Length: 81
Image 1 (cartoon, rainbow, N blue to C red):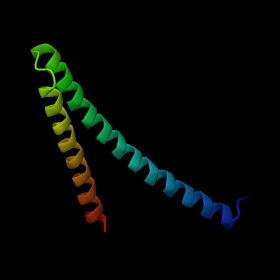
Image 2 (cartoon, rainbow, N blue to C red; image 1 turned 60 degrees about the vertical axis):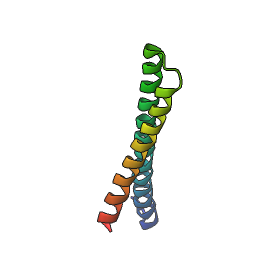
Image 3 (cartoon, rainbow, N blue to C red; image 1 turned 180 degrees about the horizontal axis):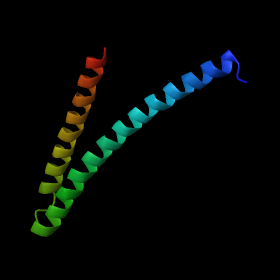
């Protein structure tokens, strides 16, 4: 049999784990979008011989992708309130 304190702890723990998983998922989305565009730029530079140009373009596109993901999350958070 569980006490009310133990039930309260398990409820708080469950909500904390859900919140952490949301933020970890966000971090993973940001990292993947950035890495994808940077690696795409690096690969294109190696194939076309335009050494830093497309890599820098990939960095810029990766940053834009990160900003879009963050804006989407902020909009969703504002809708929940």
